[in-house]
Amino acid sequence: MKKKWGIVCLICLALAVLWGAFFGKQGQVEQPNIKIGVITYKSNDTFVESIVTAMEQSARQWEQETGIYITMDISSAQESQRTQNSQVERYLSLGYDVLCVNLVDRTDASTVVDLAAGAQVPVIFFNREPVQEDLMRADDVYYVGTRAEETGRAQGELAVEAFLDGRMVDKNQDGVLQYVMLEGEMGHQDAIIRTEESVQVLKESGIATQLLASAVGNWERSQGAALMEQWLNQGLPIELVLSNNDDMALGALDALQKAEMTVPVIGIDGTEEGKEAVQNGTLLATVDCNGQAQGEAIFSLAMALAQEEAVPAQLEIEGDHYLWIPIDKMTGE
Image (cartoon, rainbow, N blue to C red):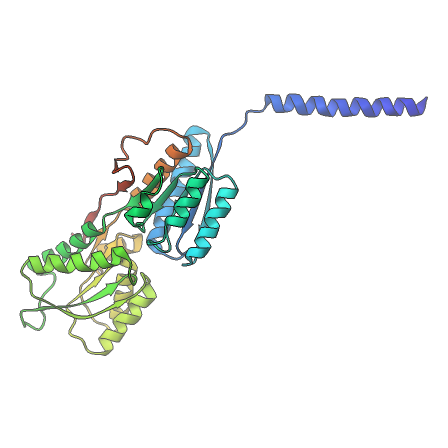
């Protein structure tokens, strides 16, 4: 008899557990969850970090306002396109809703596009613009960033304005503005265009220029400092430093301060440190590429795509694939 009662009790206990589980699940409100995979080309690019930080801030604000939970996983490819392709495959296999990719090799986006298109997952490239042919390989493939030509010309305009109002002078009075150029990356489209356009604006203004030296600093502050120190040790009569980004510009300032010398330096990006240096007068000027606005725009576009909604009207998509973020010129004044 005791054995029978024991069996009955076990059956009742099992039924109670099943009953509770069933009605407990019925009473639960399942939280929506959107998964965004973010892959950067490397982990220590200051401007890219500012964009990703703005994306994370936007995600937390969105969660608070809508109750939609957002998983945003961030990976770094550490400058390997093969690694980045593998990371894309992993995010797709885990069912992520949208990918945001800061390419390692802007000329080799086809693998990323094809993998995502095969899984029917949208891709947003940012900061490092793919070649147009790759961007057009599929629908729901976008690029968010600034126009390299605009940033280069704005830098040149800042130099012209500084020369005309006396903040930058022809120190040796030879009628020629001697300058050095810190280039971002070998073969990188933005580096090439920024370099060419900034100097072109100086030429168009009628200011005679002479390039004393140029070198690739890979967007890094430490390399900018090392190159500037080398040029100073060579005794080059530098009257202006043009840098493809703020980090290298700040590196040049580090070397100049170490040598107790003052030379006008103009950067591009508008990083927080770059803006602070402009405000305290150590960096002559910078072109603000609005990392905050870029991050917010990428996130808004990602959410629309992940939820299969219309792209918000304020995100003005050009040619079905491009979202251009406006720039600003920033001086201490």
